[in-house]
Amino acid sequence: MDGLLVLADGTVFPGEVHSSDIATGEVVFNTVLSGYQEVITDPSYAGQIVCFTYPHIGNYGVTPEDDESDRPRCRGVIARSLTERPSNRRATESLPGWLARHGTPVLTGIDTRRLTRHLRDAGSICGAFGPASEEDALLAAAKAEPGTDGVDLVAEVTARAPYTRGDGPLRVVAYDLGIKRNILRQLGEIATVEVVPATTPAEEVLARRPDGVFLSNGPGDPETVGLDLRPLLGMVPVFGICLGHQLLARALGGRTYKLRFGHHGGNHPVRRLATGTVEITSQNHNFAVAEGSVPAADVTHVNLNDGVIEGIACRDVPAFSVQYHPEAGPGPHDARYLFEEFHRLMERV
Figure 1: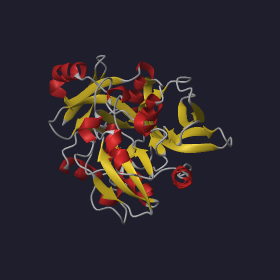
Figure 2: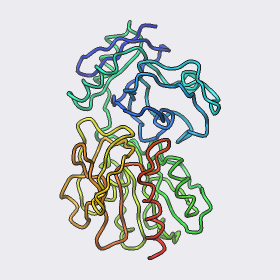
Figure 3: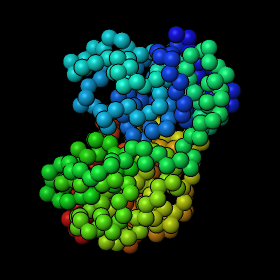
Figure 4: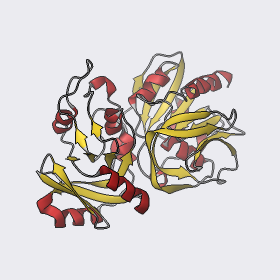
């Protein structure tokens, strides 16, 4: 049926909706050409509506093997067009059929280039999409949507009880702030990983006597995560990714801030300062670490698009983190070495 995306600033984008449901959330754009299933099931997208800039999404269908969590986590999906008949030997379902089965709202047929340019100019903005006959209700819903600022979205996606994955020789406790399955696959090659809820006190983690602690990716504002990680520092090696990177920086006294429209895509160039090499990285974050706010750590990686800090390493304690996703799949694997660095750090301590 005829549909509309209405942003909180009143901008309207006509298209077609595939159900009468109204989707609300912070609207972000993602530039990946493949990996749409991984994006949609990434818990880091909780609270957000994802617009894919690539015009044709779904050509290779979906398969349970590519899920990053148990279901779609974003509030809605926007695309120029979705493929109804995928062509791939691995496909078990079409993308539209899979989204419909999970009840994920979908808007197609809109000018995604115009929307992307608007988001780049206006910055992060909330929106709502649904039937075209509900334009007034959509505008009201968009204006009422709180977005991701000051909202504890980690509480929506974290595990309710501990569980174990992997069978590697070391022992790692991983904080589930919205952890992706591919992270657990990578960690599981080097350690037996006990995943714990985001509310688990650091003292309880240390009582498990792990060889290392991992801080996962996750959604939302790091200021809202009420987790004191300071007792871990100096007691056990720590590795953080994405939100985990931001929380490590804050535990070291650093500050975080919200980016204008975030980093969401699979082709961000990042310079590794130690070697000067450039890594092509997968990214998904709205917040970043403020430059110069973490005097106890060295900056290890920098985004070449806008200079955002992409990695830090502590000087006095065995802890490091990166803002991007070295586990990304499908996606660039330039940064997979970071898991081996964590492995070596745990063996040295």
